[in-house]
Length: 506
Image 1 (tube, one colour):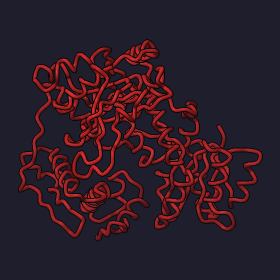
Image 2 (cartoon, one colour):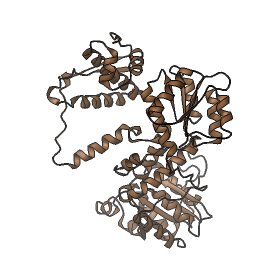
Image 3 (cartoon, one colour):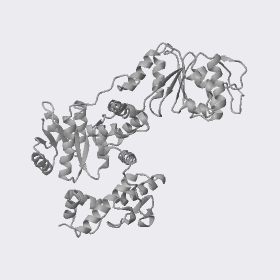
């Protein structure tokens, strides 16, 4: 394994990091300035690079920029003054793995370097996706059946009905059917019938003549005309108003339609593909969907499996979406640890592929470091999994909520503070009642439009812990740090940040 490079003009910081990493049996090499480190890069490379941001001559950001141009996969940790937020932002924009704020806790620094080292030693790297985005990704048997069906329909103009849960990728299948059909060179027009008001949907589909209604100042071509010789994809067909279903049936039956306000029939040479997440047979039985239209649409049915039925596809989808999201933002793609990936594979993900894609976008922007651990994922994911597990267990006790009078909420400007009961004052809610209170407070803040909820509650949580620990240690902050499991430098910095009084050195 190659050594860890430490670049800092402060000899004491170099010495402390060298000794701490030596205790971990990690080899190091130190430089007093960026110029010497840049020169050394000509003939050797580190496993991880740790660099101060402000040094005489070339800065740490200059070094970061050069390293990322030569060795884009090398994790770089930037050391910066705690108050220098601009530098931290610049470090992340430059591709830094993470940053250390001075004064830093040495144990936390070693832990961070360990994470960067694991990242550097990881043998499997993110695949740099193909130049052309694939139409649909999937290796699961259920998806292979979908691919085979698309292949069989490649030379056909037959009407297809695609069913599947929301977010499962029905429009992607429709586009693939069009792309591999004889109409591929002609337009593909998509319309979500549930997203357009009933009064406008008829005009959207069939167009209108000038003067057909108030505001119709010009003649407008509808989606059928726009899709001439190509494919018209009607999503959420189950939500189409009943009277419009009759007009659609007429087009499918004889290939003719009228613009709104028009008297001249127009011929449509269009392949129609529809999709729905609803049970159309049930809607027919309920009198909400025309049975004759259902049979016209249901010539060939393709059922798209939910993500729960193809969990083996989640890893390749995650890698694809992370690369795609990173390209859009112009940053290096994040990668998931094995534990985090296994965690994702076990989630229900009711939003299917769309939810997974949105999650990957969140990870690209919000997750710290390049390797994403379970703790870096949105908190609601673990809460949802826990709730699902509890619901699935018949022996699980029902959650109990503490009485309302056991806590109070105060508003200070835009910041909401929650007064949590003292330890031992759990009321009828049991020892975990404070979690219920926290969830209640978070829900109240979110519904009220509060911004930065995580930061606000996080500061209150840290403040409550540190104040309580100081009470137990009679104000001795070093003893309190040991009780809390954090470093001495960390508790000193937190006490200053949070404005906590009454602390003293041991």
